[in-house]
Image (cartoon, rainbow, N blue to C red):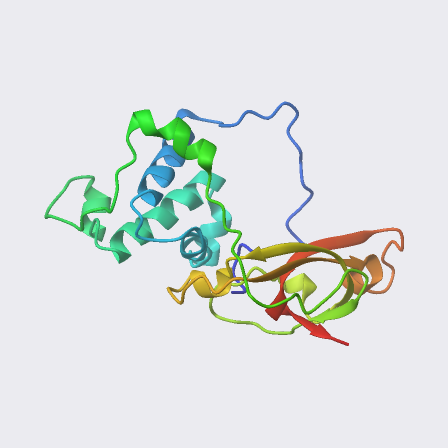
Length: 219
């Protein structure tokens, strides 16, 4: 999806200003936003890829005007309403008005440390061998889907070289929309600066991305 989240290489947004010794959270409510997102994700009703797509669908003006954790909360609101856990009216009022869907599981306080330590591994086994090898030149596909994708706009229809074969993982483009995990081989592909930024680019710069097999084509 070519949404407001896909800002790589775009101009006009000003410089990136790193914050020295930046804290994990800039306000207490951000801690709660993270906790709510993790707790709701533990319901088992949606995948991480669907949650990403929910955030991507926030209208661009609202997305770009929001802070990081504001975007997370708006995404969670969409998912809670979509899966029947709360209505829009309940989310706006902050009060339960009717019975909603029952979660498959509930993340309790004593479970948090173990759940976070376990993480959410997304590596999966596939029966086929990888199509591409390290050192092979490839081209990324040129597509602009209305659905979720992890191939950034700036790296589409670009020629690069396979830098590493990372293994096989859940394919997010399908998993975001309830089509199953459909794992694919994942590659790190490196591009030189001129291929990404064109004429006048610093020839010493390179950009590497992780690309699923279906994003790539042989030259």
